[in-house]
Length: 94
Image (cartoon, rainbow, N blue to C red; front, top):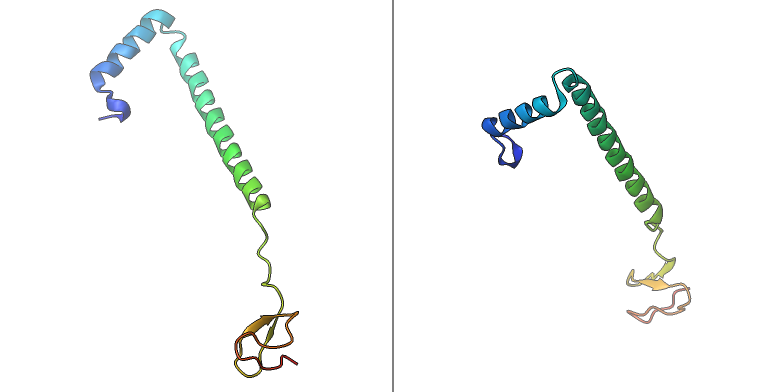
């Protein structure tokens, strides 16, 4: 079974219609053009995907180090730099 629920009878019908409409001389040319079109569409989709990925990587915030903190010598609790006393134990941060 092929994708989109298309069976062998349907494919034969499509081939016969193409043969009648375009003739046997143009079928290889049409197949070649169709192959080129599919290749170009895949390349464009790949380029677009890589462009979106690159843009998302540029827009993503850079992983930055956490803000500088002072560590309390008594309880080892990190505190903001502007604090002079530990917010956990009240000890002097130096």
